[in-house]
Image (cartoon, rainbow, N blue to C red; front, side, top):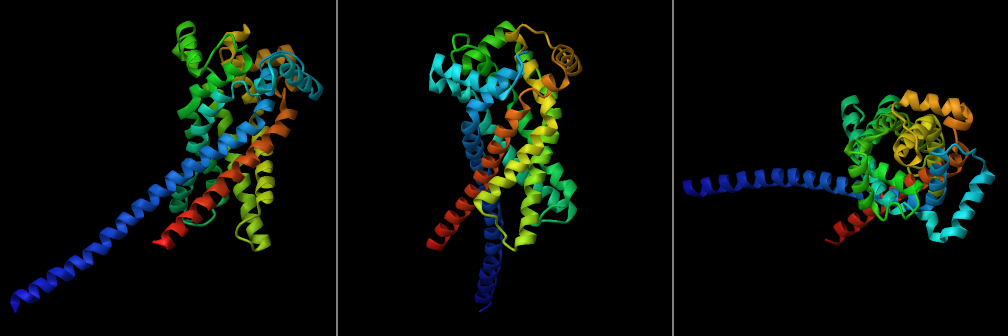
Length: 326
């Protein structure tokens, strides 16, 4: 009889421990699934958005790194001349390098943003709720900085491929090899400082604006989720504000990245700015191509945020359907 009681106690103890272990394992799987979903959704969002605006992006970079005056008419002429000379798909030249950079960049940025939101939400006591303004801004800035630090050499390669003839660099690996041999490995990080200085306000304000507009929409409309066209509009506003805030640093970054193939010797951020302003002026130099960015940027950011959100929703629904089926 005593043995029977001991066996029953042992079985009760096992029965009490097993659910705890299962619960802990379930939380770990949930966290892992959330990270994988964020990485996949972010990668898809970046790829779709950048491919959609690649011809405009390439044209903007060409004007940014040259001293030619920018206008919508000149931008159209450049696109048309490129099409006539090299064919339709030449408008996407450098897009393979863009994808190699954008897919990991967007995946890391969106995933990091979700993680930072969770960490800051726990720290400020807003776990599972919309963050207050400052942590909302901070989460975006930290996410952008994390992604930029981990993928910067790929951005350098992409800029080189966008402004050089295809005879100069045959593929992405060729760019890495030639830069390393002819200019040194340090060149792969030329323009890194203005990139980080620009990404802090850009990513911070982009995520902040998008999240704030979604929060205000939910409060005013009573709908927890906006429609797709509303997401596009919120993302467009976020892109317009974010890119305008950091545009001069974007011009400086491109000049420093392409210095080896344009014949200039840009050394520092301030030195590059001074040279641009003295040769081209403030507006025509530091804000060259901004009007095109006001077209390209909102489209790209709108598509990016919308694709990320809708992919996340789809993945959650697919998981729930699978869970229900089991």
